[in-house]
Image (cartoon, rainbow over all chains, first blue to last red; front, top):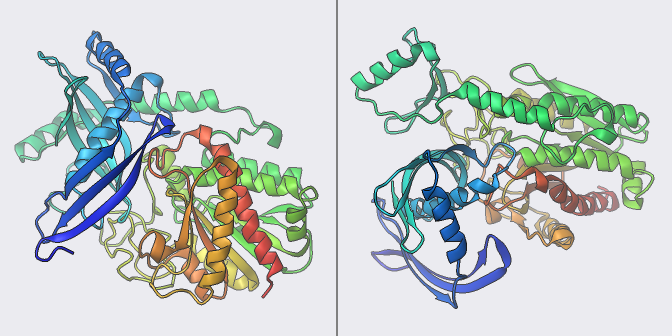
Length: 167
Length: 377
């Protein structure tokens, strides 16, 4: 408890690469949930012990693949009802996962636990600059209330410049 | 909008200002609805451009993966099935094991679908019994799939596996695979994320009651919702749902059920009472030890890690749950499983994980059932 401010948690965690279970990295973090009714995202500070894997090759491959599409990418229901994600859609799925993490962070309290349930719809928006832009309609699953929450997010991404999310 | 002659079909009913509503608009009404929304300053976005196209695609995919299942040996345990397919398969299981397995109807759902149990019995008269259920929450497809595989496994292993044989030589097993058939049909036809029953709520546009908050154990508390639009709506009163009442009546009527194992997804947990209070159950220690063993035997198969403990300690406060009711009504060995995964796919667990999930869960189920057999009460 931090009097008058909120609740602070000190965490020691292990990050695991979703695509390579044997690749792990230790991490420590401090999370401060603010007191009061205002919905402010919790403050997060973290330190990663070691380095994250280099993903340049896969990033560039995806980037070039999308850039070379004649028509803007449009897709629905990722994964589908049976849990399938086609190989071409896997990077779209992973990007949504990262971006939804930001949305979850912004909407987290000590009484919420979010997961990305599904991408209902994704549409690429062509840009004149070097960024890729995707408009996502996603479904978030909030475990405590069990609610399925639709959310619209616009995601910008560039291999070297990372992810940006506007809600 | 629903009062206008546009035949708009609400997939998510308006509940309160600021919360979204989803509606399916028939093509002839599209222009009129758009004009209506725009002229009333209601912002909208199109989630699915052509529903029919999606349905055609899904139908095509299901046709491609469906095989003509004429016997148990051709049933594809590694894919997800429809209600009809599961009900047909149940009849095949009974046909293949007529002296061991029978099918019992215990009631009807809200929309009048049959509620079926598979009864595994080698005879006797009202032997002490173990109850298993899957699919009480319809979007948890891995549970029905695991249920089908497990029922088949039980039938196969009688006379082969010493534990299964010992259990069925003294006890009966009752297995309800599709505990919420209305919800399950709805996840196939309309909304893959549907959880609740499909009962109409008086005075509300929202449909359905959470069947795992509708039991008479701490009913109506803050571990459930009084809002019909909520996913954890407890219903107007305990056992209001036909799907729940049918089980209550069956277990009460039977009088000798010694264990209730209710299977859900997802989170990878093995839970026991209580969910409606934080005070430990009188048998907490024994249940905790048994859960610990079951979870450890599950992990041996593929390394899948489960957490375990009381519902209130491990997941959240939940009022009106199946296992709390069972426990408070004399069923000591009451457990809830939360199967794979921990959120990466969540409810949309790939079908490639069906058999691994069922395979790893089997030793955990056996641990519980053997313990029940060896600790009569």
